Length: 159
Image (tube, rainbow, N blue to C red; front, side):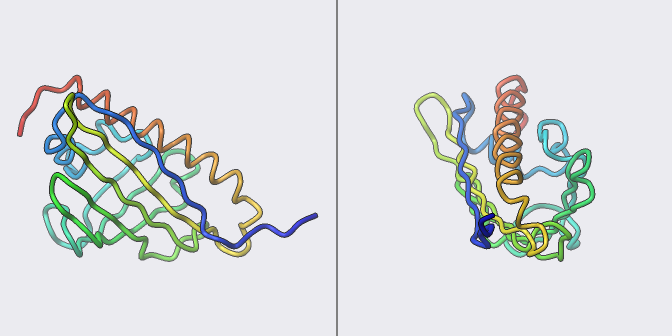
């Protein structure tokens, strides 16, 4: 049996949303409304004392189902309103050795495009699960973006 790679795994998912990038960006980073559209999470909160997302802000997100066992605390490395935000995991996870993600928002003629990129590495003792984790994460991110699209396109602008 071959050795499972310890290399970082990456993925990219994107979608077009018939809403301006500025409104989509505000929706994504409004933690008071996050659970209304985010299909991946059962809990999302800013834990570093600030009231809104921004560079240096730390958040804590809990997945749904069995993923509640692996909370991710992440710090915003980049936060450029209406354009891009990027985070990196800062806590010690039982499953992930590392995790990072970015969401880029681009204005289009019919609204905007959202591009979600992620990278992860499982801890050494869980690396045999890498192909499964990659497949599950890819499917979950696609559902998450679909949830964002549906929410933004059905919700009147409030910003």
